[in-house]
Amino acid sequence: MTQSSTTKASSPCTKVCILDAVTGLCEGCGRTRDEIGLWGSLPEPRRQAIMATLEGRLAAAYPLRGRVIAKQ
Image 1 (spheres, one colour):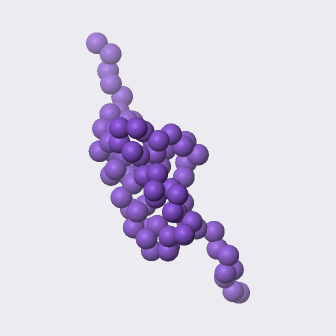
Image 2: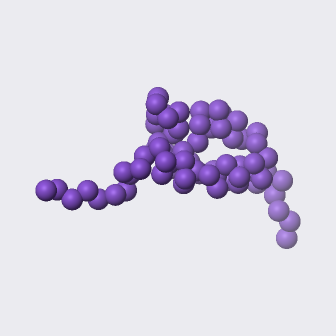
């Protein structure tokens, strides 16, 4: 079995494409505008390296996201 030479690039896209003017990050995936624009031309090892940072970026940019805040 051979692997196709047109293998689709890995992507962290969540289809929630909202660029935050303050952080410069996509609120869905955590990539910058430049990273999103260049994504298809980046080599797979570079895409994987960027994807490894996204969870931390989003956590730093939005520290309260995903936390339940108790009402008093």
